[in-house]
Image (cartoon, rainbow, N blue to C red; front, side, top):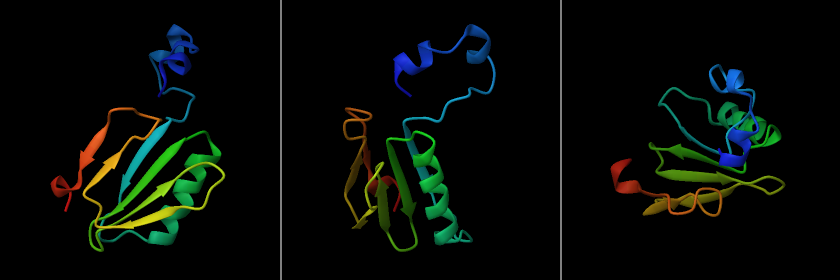
Length: 98
């Protein structure tokens, strides 16, 4: 999460389960996961303030990227994923995942 959001918390809140949703989430699908359920979970994250959500399906080697107010983008076998402007400089080489 952005530092300004973290700093808006009281010291007591920072020591417990924080009452904020992160700005960026990555959700890897387990083999037994239901894609529809995880897509709904990603929407719930967006509804609570996530700015970038990434759903990774290792079995199909597909990635879905979620942004507020937009339809998810689906990518087949991407070589890398980035944190875009939400987490500048973050790059995940997908060969570590596949």
